[in-house]
Amino acid sequence: MAKLSIDALYGQKLFLYNGSICHKNKFDKSSLLESIIHPSSAIVFGYEAWTIHSKDGQSHFGFIVGENEHSITIKELSGIKQTIALTEIVSRKKQAKSLMPEATAMMLSGQDLTDLSVYLLAKEK
Image 1 (cartoon, rainbow, N blue to C red):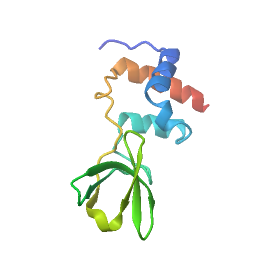
Image 2 (cartoon, helix red, strand yellow):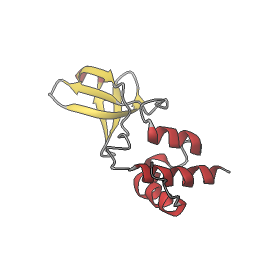
Image 3 (tube, rainbow, N blue to C red):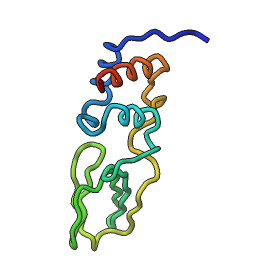
Image 4 (cartoon, one colour):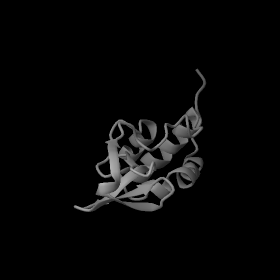
């Protein structure tokens, strides 16, 4: 088995490029690393993905960021917030998987994960 090198600076670049926008100040570094490696293992409250279908045939997918007796507001993956009247909703379903893609889907290699781990865990000390 080949030994992986360690490059925390490259790990920092990976985090800044791939994760800092969504994950800035949301987790301690160990939990953040766990969510990167296993994104669906522990979805934080408020970050559950929902699919909402409306009477006009539209589908909305994202996080519910507001709800009252008249409407639901969902923040879609694009960042756009959509407010939908409850009377217009045909169905709504919480998704079992995280919106965050698996590391392999983000094209992160074992070396990338090593460098990212070293960066994140070093920052926790």
